[in-house]
Length: 233
Length: 254
Ligand SMILES: Nc1ncnc2c1ncn2[C@@H]1O[C@H](COP(=O)(O)OP(=O)(O)O)[C@@H](O)[C@H]1O
Ligand SMILES: [Mg+2]
Image (cartoon, rainbow over all chains, first blue to last red; front, side):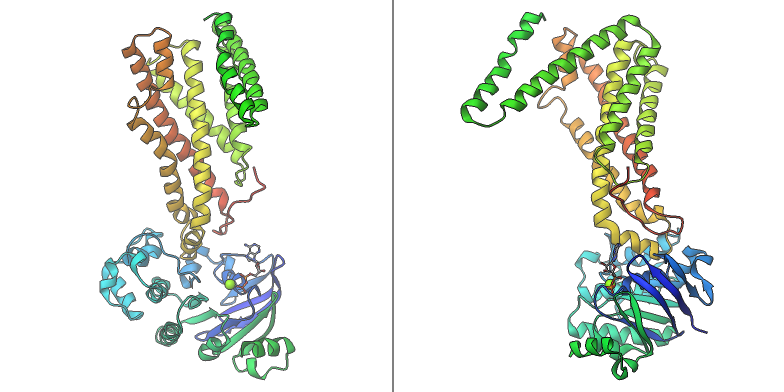
């Protein structure tokens, strides 16, 4: 059974009748031109947005039939700009706990930093002093605080240099297999999608043109995908 | 002061009028309108107050206060805040702040229950509440734009709207109160506060004028804090829905 399914999902003028699914313990990338509705789709998976029509299912059940606050711990999200609050790295790692009235603790925080290959000395550093690559890692570490089953990543490498981009890709792939999470990853970079994907969704102008194991992107007969792929080279 | 003396004070209007004509600043029309309006509005208020004071009737006092609240809320709401239901929130806040202030002032007999005291002090309370509400809403709007990503971030952790908004909300409350607190620190150093000057000109003992002014300052501190906190905590839930989603400001709403 797919872990997440979209059934005839429409939203304003942004998404049109999207039906598709995601396999568990796989990396699925969302590919498609800017403005295609990728971020909108992603936010529907953890209920930050709801469809006007249709439904999004998590393990066969409409996500709004779950306690939405609990579901968001299970389906965790990293945003494009790696937003941070003022304060230290620890304050930011602790944020997902703090908002539930809990405390993360230094040991667990150090463990999370270790997962993203940063050492524990970062904990006391103010976030305004850290670099872009470190910021992305911290944002990624933060998504693991509640031990999620699904990670939603929205263009998390778009502001990084090429070398750092490759580092983050390796990191996500390693964490995906080690932690056995399902990853849904938006990227506008087709090369990146080819490197990291098991599966792909290709979206254009709010429509899901094709989805499935990643190879389709280079084998498809669909003219819209073919012209997008050509434009990338 | 006699009407003749007031008439002579129009010299102070003639000077800027002459300057704007001579230098072609183009302000003459505005200066004339402003002068005429201030004369008419204040004279009307003067006659109304005389009438209310002489009648000494509770109904008229309450009517005056209601009028002030209506005018003040009109002023806040017409700025178009983007928060649904803000009209009711502002009116409720003005009522509560006025009621709390008067409750303490009259309950502890800090001021005598006379219209000469109640009406001008209510005017200051309501006016200050209006200014602080506006100030708060402006800061809050800026904070929401700047803090939108953090709001969505916290919601994405499963945090409640209160947790998501708390940083933006508290920062807006704090910054909207700063001018009031800062003004208190320099009070009396540069210029004498208007009300105190008025009392002294009217022949009051300076120390008594100071004591009155202090009372007003403390009162204004309370109205500032209450206004920002109340407007803030009553408005933020309107920015979210039942599904813990952030809707944000809707510019057409009042
Ligand atoms: N809050 C919003 N209100 C109205 N339109 C929006 C909003 N957010 C995004 N859009 C529009 O929806 C479309 C899809 O946006 P998005 O999902 O961000 O696309 P992508 O992530 O694929 O670039 C775009 O045309 C965008 O302008
Ligand atoms: Mg996007």
